[in-house]
Image 1 (cartoon, rainbow, N blue to C red):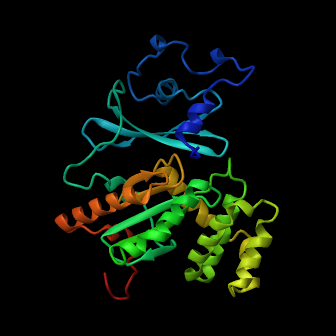
Image 2 (cartoon, rainbow, N blue to C red; image 1 turned 45 degrees about the horizontal axis):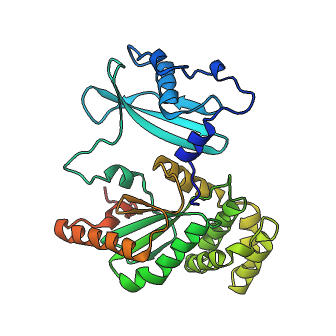
Image 3 (cartoon, rainbow, N blue to C red; image 1 turned 135 degrees about the horizontal axis):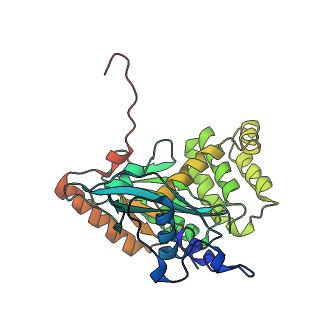
Amino acid sequence: MRKLIGLALLAALSIPLPGQNRAASTLPATPGRVAAPSSFDKLGLENFVRHLLLWGPQITVTVADPAPGPMPGYQEVKVTGAYQQASLDEVFYVSQDGRKIVRGAVYDIGKSPFAAELAKLKTDLSPSMGTPGAQVVIVLFSDFQCAYCRDAAKTIRDNLLKTYPKEVRLYFKDFPIEQIHPWAKTASIAGRCVFRQNPGAFWEYHDWIFDKQQEMTVDNLKAKISEWAQAKGLDAMQFSRCYDNRSTEADIARSMAEGRALRLSSTPTMFINGRQVPGSVPWPQLKAILDWELDYSKKTGESGEKCCEITLPVPGKK
């Protein structure tokens, strides 16, 4: 089965644990006991959301301060549910009097329907392949210990650049699910160490570790990766120092935070010009989506790479 996190995990964890007394939680016993708040009230909203989403007492719920909403008369409020290392953000739009709550997406017909996702995707300093300025950009969140991610990686590597040598650019993002994949995060840290030392070697590492996925364990991971790095001619001392000190862990943390902000619920997950495409998609279906985006780009003149440009300050230029 696909490894689900976020919503599926939190919903499953909402079932009371043995010995817990549901009546002791803040979750109302019956729907009729939920009272709509008369003004913005964090506790009232928390109780409502817990009941709505089946977030039980073992889930920590944080209600953020309201921010200006995308439509008149409503404030935007982010509610985060967390359990151990898993977390999920839900966005609600709350009326000024606090009595009406809207859950869902709000679109501006004059903008891309995926503008919010594009704004959250940060591809600078991420491993990439394809032509800069491509019409279509794929941002792929993956986990080196995930079998479905391995299948998706093979599909992409076998077909993408062969079919679209100039039209598509792909960026790789780490999203290791530590709760079920004990060595995935360490493998991501190692991959970023490779990328820092030799960006071109990252894709060789990517292909190799997915190919050897079944052989890897928590105990042998370091030895196997170090042996591979030495065989590829990487500076052994530099790589070992980066690996042992977990120097790239902050890079992985940023990538994971980005995924959570985008409400990822599984790996692999792709964003194709901002459009979320979860799961390991067979090549014919993926090609159909890419062709659709390419056709749209030709009609509108919009380029997917706009989301991924890096602007460097130029002395004397404002």
